[in-house]
Image (cartoon, rainbow, N blue to C red):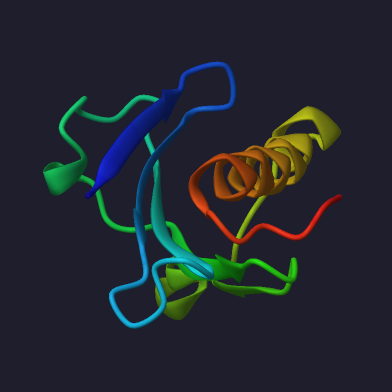
Length: 102
């Protein structure tokens, strides 16, 4: 079951789904930077992808950095990544049945 969420305030769209090998314990996701981009994430390259598991461990691969250095123009712009991380953990807590407390 794939879930698509738009975080307009921070300029990201996220597509997340339970891991096919461990749906009770891990959530996989892809994030697309959608500020000034087409609304359809199929047209936007993946900014980062990764997973969060029920024991709160996570893996983050910044696809954007494969092509060039990640650049921030301000502290506010860099804060968007921090907010995205928090939103992903909140989503994992909501969607992973075996989530282990805070």
